Image 1: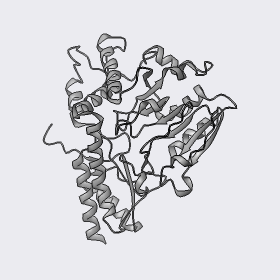
Image 2: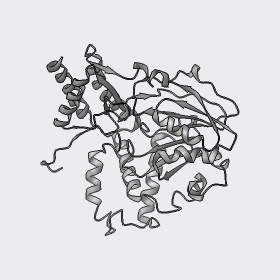
Image 3: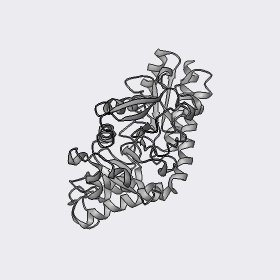
Image 4: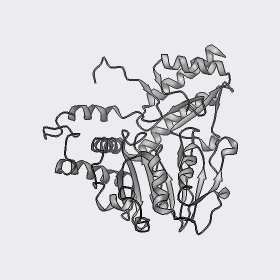
Length: 365
């Protein structure tokens, strides 16, 4: 890397940090991709050179997540937000019920879209407690006839995360994993559909990954627009139309980076260390910093907190910006502070921020 370049301490919530090794490789291949004389952005999505990129990314995702053979991996567009409507459009018929577990703003948005197609209801909600925790399994009440159950695995705005997932039996379980996919191991077979915007843990914005059980695709509503059918993309290996080729290339490189690190288990250990060093600064502050999430619901990906004095909080955010910490402001809907420690954020960045927090407390308490 050019020694004159000073990389930011990037805590942006999305689009978020990308691995430096991946960025460097992309820079090397940007003009001449593997001897083609073209950038990967210029390749035809029907070419052999691009097909190799495309299929390699799919294969790596299957390998890293141990995805069973009865699932398809799809590359879609429109982000997680399009999935909020695409899911009920495919799987929720008029008059049918679907259960939504409410843990934050994104589950609220998904629920709102589902109301356009059927009769969604709240399986459980922690809104009354300002979304400070994930519901316990014994708080989940749903119907055996539900079309599906939907949850959001990690809540970027409130900083909460599911540690394990419910077993819903024959009822399809659908999850928005946009902000924590590949951050820790989980059993794919518990879910009928997982979707995730790439721009937090998988790559740049523009690609949405869907991991969907094949039998669920077969049950989808056939009377919807072609591009909004999962079957369209499944039958065409996500090449029905021009996919976001550069984004998929970058996604594949991020997956290769994860594999080279030692896979998800190695990444989980690293993510736990990163999050803990910042949580320690909160927990050891004697109330100077106040975490939003209850301890047993804390996210490894989004650490949310307040300073116990509003003016000091403004000062902290201003000084953090001067020190090169980017993206530390909380979401505009709730305020406060947030450090998003996604997979590509280095431990050194988190350690530097923890030390900054401790020093700020020492000077200002």
